[in-house]
Length: 611
Image (cartoon, rainbow, N blue to C red):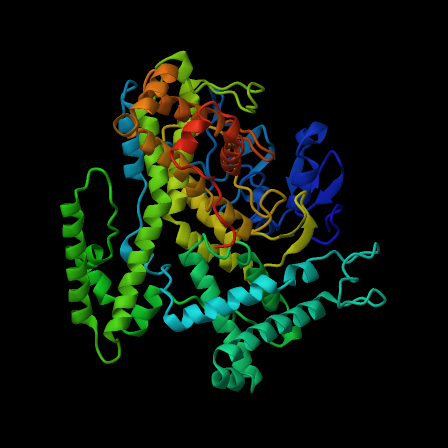
């Protein structure tokens, strides 16, 4: 048993402390000071406990075999080439100075010349990164909501908005009196957590059923008749809510977590409350519908036509109105042809159209999430030289302790660090829908228990995320293989105090387009200033020399201090890069060029939580 938390099996033995810890507590107790250099040994037979936590990427399981002793990886100009573990494998290292992986990924031979243009290198790296085929994507594409389901969604959002579920359930039960003196729970007698969960789930059902009765009296009263109908009604409402969130990540930002925790508790306490709200209730997907109606051949046989019918039409300065009109007509024609060919009595035309529109929705979703990252990669490789800066003013060099930076990189190293970070984000955005499904599978796993812990940001449910850990390990390995060298750490925080669970992880990466989108928008709008506002163009010319130099100044500042390891949990690890960017966003108002953001319509980075 872990000596620190006393409720989790120990997986690590510290030789210096002479104590046993779980992976999470060891990391917390040995993150700094003299304890940082303590020697640890993973306990034999416990590697599974580390999967889905930060320890999977930092200090995995100890193997007694001494056949593969690998020397530490080579340090290159402030960067660390950290080998990545293959999917499902774990590593061991006795301390953070030496890495002994079970399997090292062999670096590919560089075929490029030393003086190769970085633009070509970026393109080559992106070519190496594989995209998923449509046949594979449809397994993760949710079906668009019907009119009836949108009605259930409104009911669910209304009930969740007034629910105090997490306030009543996620409280610490200890000898100090917390957790049993809230409103309905008497302070004279403790109420067990399963009882609180059951009571609060009954409350959410009562609210939902009351709203449903108000909406449709006859159907609502019929649903109240039996417990089976009640359970099916709740399952359907929650499935619609989950599907809508994956389709529209910007919605339900203040209620989705509450809903997921309800489902999580219904799984863990299904026997006590008499039902599980996610059992046999998988999210409806395009693949599931096509398989049930034996129409998977549409994707395989008519893939070109499907691509035309679902391709997003994105306006751009390079597209004329005639071209956009032509694409729209072609898309509508392809859609009509597919509906005519594959609709039948068992698969009505409106349902086939719904499936195709669902694929189209997903394409627009990916375009919106990935486009800002693609643009930033283009701007980085177009306006900055990879090896030496155009001028001292546009150098990407950073030094620890200067302007809040926690890392020290020369221009070339920082260029590589930013490029590989953007490539990583690009792959995460491309895989976002699948990662969301995996996050829910981790959160709602019957055998994946959580602990309520104080993480420094209030009480959080700390839970391993093995599916997300495996997926991120694969993405990291792909990106690592696509770039020349890896700068910084390959640590992904999962199941620890920085990223307590898969919900926090997926929420962090939905911030990427919210960070990059406003920056890209401002830079695009600045390009039009000379033609639209000569007076503003004169001001820019006076202070910066040209609009191009202003754009480069904004970009160089972001590429320096949006990736400098700053922030409360920053650093060169995978999550620290995102934290640094958020830290840069929080200081945007103090930047000399901030007025130009306002003049181009900038309102903020985070949007509205009420949407």
